[in-house]
Amino acid sequence: TTGMIFDSGLSQIQRQNSQLLDTQQQVATGRRILKPSDDPVASARALEVSQSKSVNALYAANQGYASDALRVVDSKLDAANELVTYVRTRAVEAGNGAYSNSERVAIASDISQQFSALQSIANSQDSTGDYVFAGYRSNTQPFVGSMAGGITYQGDQGARTLQISSSRNLPITSSGEEI
Image (cartoon, rainbow, N blue to C red; front, top):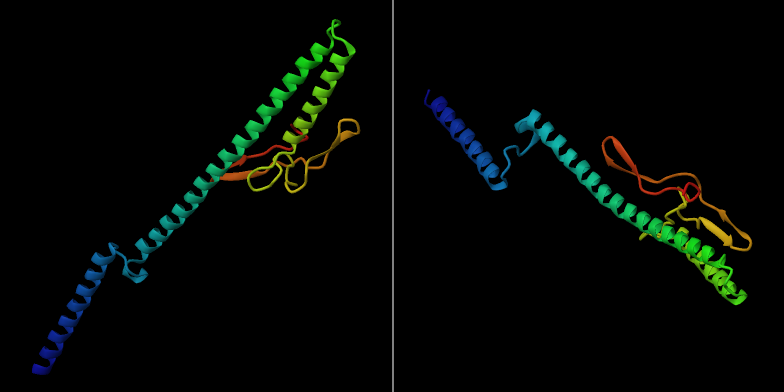
């Protein structure tokens, strides 16, 4: 009948109009999938890719943080090594028989100051205020005491780590006791 032909033509025009609207939205957004029902398999895959991208961004941020943290540890250990080398040199100098008592007292005073500097390095903090060599107890000053009374370690044996990939955790500190 004429009514059926008219309804069929109207239905076809509405379907084509809907397809045109979908195509215009795809062009405007630059995306082929506008809603999950358009292509469920591709939608699921796009979600996986998006999640993987977020995880990889987190790993990249962790790698940067780990690199910075290891640079701090390395610089502190280099400074400590230089101090120990300097103290050894001064101790050997003190054994010189030609030195007077006042020169040996000056060397002892210098070594005492170097000890304080070494303790300060051992109690170093990173940019977030955590003690570098305290293990997991990063909010506790690791080395307390004095040269005369002795030094005690207040940290623990843990080493903080960061996950830098799906299968690798990288230690970014060492315990002061280990060092």
